Image 1 (spheres, one colour):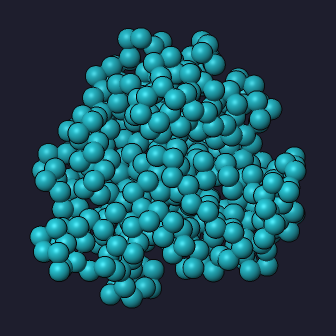
Image 2 (cartoon, rainbow, N blue to C red; image 1 turned 90 degrees about the horizontal axis):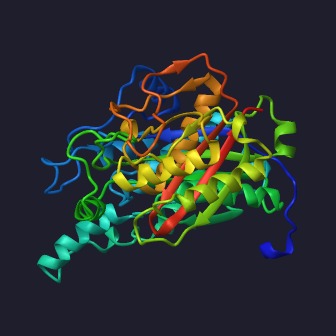
Image 3 (cartoon, helix red, strand yellow; image 1 turned 120 degrees about the horizontal axis):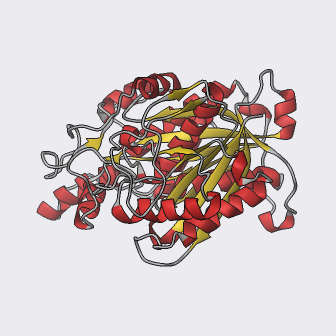
Length: 409
């Protein structure tokens, strides 16, 4: 394969031909859409993850065991495959099936994102090995690396032309969609599965609890009394295709990747900058690339974690850009939980559904506006509204801020 620097960035358009999702509110796109319409969230008691926090902290856990997930995929239940990989296989397979495209006819790549990698299995190895240095199944360590899930998904679906893994905290999946789009624009591949996958682990539950940003009740993004987030797990993938592939498709693509932007404000290891500078730069960069004006955005799927710092910072950035005309906006994390590296992929799928079905989702659990802001999220499902352009934010630790703009086509 020739190095990427030999290619010159082209004005090639990038489209979304298929979507796939698995989360606490559904195992398919259709199940997810039904849950969103019904206001049915996935946050509740933890049942599968063995953690000391399971009686104290709610989470958006997927209520199937790893063996049940393997059976859904037709895999050997005795094979040690991480939960992260299993989620990714389910969502990526649906995105591919949803598109109706035979990837064997084209140069196809995958760019997958994750934060925890295969930690769900390697944690079990650590317990055994720590108790007795002669114990511990080494098979549970093999999938620890973040790239293992990418390779598993690629092998499962027969993707051989290009493979990359991205891990930039909670902006990981958005960055994978950005990178996948660039691969197409630069004529490296014709088709890219882009998104991400993450599972609940004790490490992340304990880590976020130590940071004191987990809500012991259901999270309340953009609410004056917000206290933290609810963790979640799952996967979201989109199948990106070039203009050439669109011309050969038998159906209209679902959306266009109109613009994207990434910015790092380098303010703090975990906190967003108080003035929202990183979020502001990511959003304005995406707008500039898209050729759209602020008034062209119909809906913002905000990062909206429910933490005191994030929501205020994001809100300030939105007001800087949109002034007194901030578009309809909401956080979907009260439905799915915060799925870390998978969040950008899951929310890209939800953004496509908003365009396809002319929906704006409710920001569950909201009751009181943040005093420092003059904006409030949508609190009920809005149907039959013209949603042409959706701006979706994903902001990660270390100030890694990313914005996608998806549009009707």
